Image 1 (cartoon, helix red, strand yellow):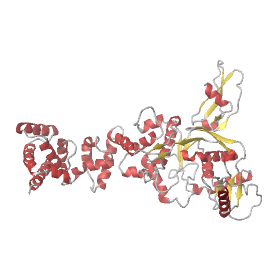
Image 2 (cartoon, helix red, strand yellow):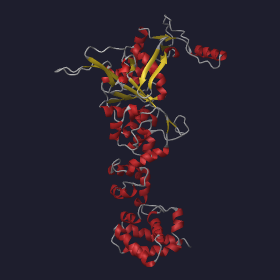
Image 3 (cartoon, helix red, strand yellow):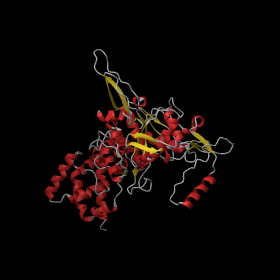
Image 4 (cartoon, rainbow, N blue to C red):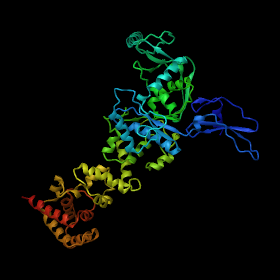
Length: 542
């Protein structure tokens, strides 16, 4: 309690400094963490009979229902790193009874397209990260495409200029490039910053221009990040930054601030690479007289070599993981554990993630994407029925069986074979491969397996095997006992019977249990395949 009270006395709380305040007579002042990650300062009267305890809240945003957003820039697909950011925001909203807003930042008209937007929405839907407001669902704070909000940005730009917090800059690119080169020639290590040429200019010629924010020349901008703690930046380390391009489109910082305010966002979560934008955005919040939301900057997702994760290193599009046959919850589980932890637990249901997620459990260190660990987590989700139910497993596998060329594959056969592959298949694609031989008239024969096991010396063993099982009732236990008894009587080694039979039945040297395979194939197909294997074995010596 003492440490929280210390935050009251001029500390940076909920992204703003709270002044020192004395407690009223007969009361005690405390502060505590608010529901959106900020801090609440309040007075608790000493107990008086008949009077309830009263809270005096000093940070209204912290008491608001959590509203978080994911604001991707559509560039062709939903990046796996962006999906992690969306997941953390979604988990916070769902776990706290708040709202999750999807907003499309499409002000970069050269990179944005209808197809790119569709790809992002498709990725979000596949992951099951539903949104309460945004494209396709609407909401009271639309439109949810930045390209459709230009009038609002223009109004706020004019307001900043009128209040003296922004100005039109008529410096051309050529002029600024010349100044930059002159500085470089004088001092190669010097960093160019805009010299404020138009900062106090009063005329407004009708020529192309940008709009710059007028950064205070003194003081500091501070905020308490929910992950990294207090971040403090001297204002004189910032230059007057551009907020509107010559074509009238706002840059990221302005559009982001306006939209987050208008949409009532209480927590802004994004990658650590954006932490340098935050002081500039806070300046704009304050210049416009708006409450500042909380910020949570997330550790970066890097490649195995430690650089930016790209297609050179691993699959980076969410759809890539869908197309490789992984489950949405398996992907989400790995993404959740990338930078967040809950004790030693590694595998989570979606409901557990919603229940346990909090910003104080997000780490600061960047991490390297580990394909092997991802595969292990995804496999755990596939093989455990409580994480991937039978219906979902069957549906996922059928999709990949169809990709293998089978028209209308039997869901009943997949269901009956499910128990034989759950501990084997690493993905739905892998599951379809494991089941492939059930759906063919004749199995695709692996050349190495055939050469090793379907050879003349084993033909007589297969003939004996065929004779024994042909007289059996078609049950796995009955078949196994009959073959085991026959092997014991004849003295034939089981491997000289079982492996040739397995290759004849499946075309492979490794498969689920031999007798389970025979039952699933059925008596007629099994006997037919064994006979075909006998012929292959006999002809191998020719």
